[in-house]
Length: 68
Image 1 (cartoon, rainbow, N blue to C red):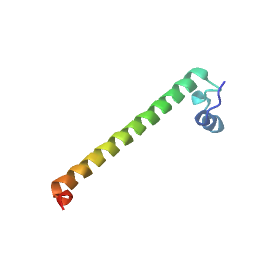
Image 2 (tube, rainbow, N blue to C red):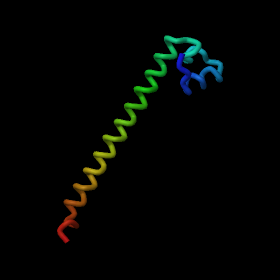
Image 3 (cartoon, rainbow, N blue to C red):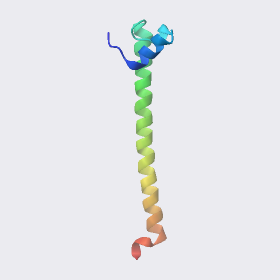
Image 4 (cartoon, rainbow, N blue to C red):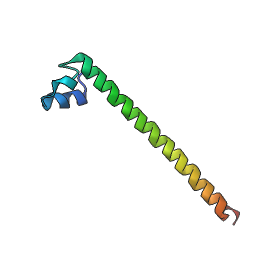
């Protein structure tokens, strides 16, 4: 069985329900949900960064500073 850091934390806290070592089904499900949330927030950060860069470029273009 793979020991993941998040499941180790739950074992140390005495919550074996979410530990992949103590409860394979709920532990694996919880680890999958955590991984999906991490991927979602990474994609959200990427999207917001792209949007912010496009907005800054548009403001710069509309201000006329690029014409100097």
